[in-house]
Image (cartoon, rainbow, N blue to C red; front, side, top):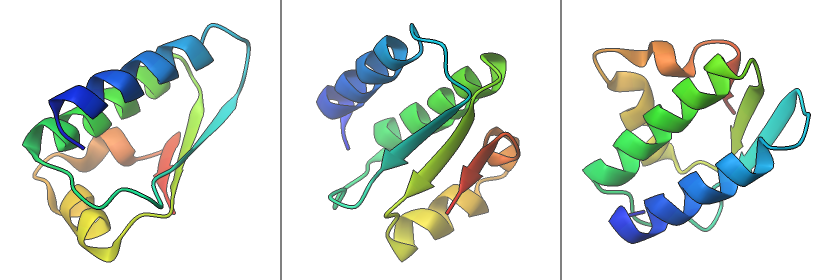
Length: 85
């Protein structure tokens, strides 16, 4: 994920949140690249879900991305209700 695809993901999530929901599942199975813009976008989205009181499940996460997301100095963006799977 880079700046172009991060913007697409952000738009898709905002569109998704226009409908009432309590849970969203983001399948990242095909994600093979994630630069710092992509990491920042994922953390921003976690905050967006938290503020909307929507549980976010990330699935299909590569081991490297999962390590990166959980090793950041401030991981609270992925604490409940946003969760890594």
